[in-house]
Length: 117
Image (cartoon, rainbow, N blue to C red):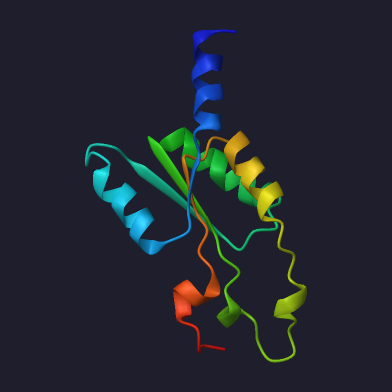
């Protein structure tokens, strides 16, 4: 394995999952200001379009952060929020394989509080 391949493999194994705002903010504050950061927001159920955005972010930034959050406010009346695919394990693996450094994966209660929706 080449040094570049070993570095890429090591990066793939080191994706950190943040489930709290405090955790993602803490990580971001610790990053040197000289590093560029790419952010790819998603609702999960990743497809080639998402992955092309991750590739682009990876090619242009020192650190790549992705998020997976199924946002209930993006679903209108009659649209089925409960049927939206949730495949966190599969999506996390894909993001890791594509070189994402940090994944922000909050739940609805964290983002909106327990009494919202």
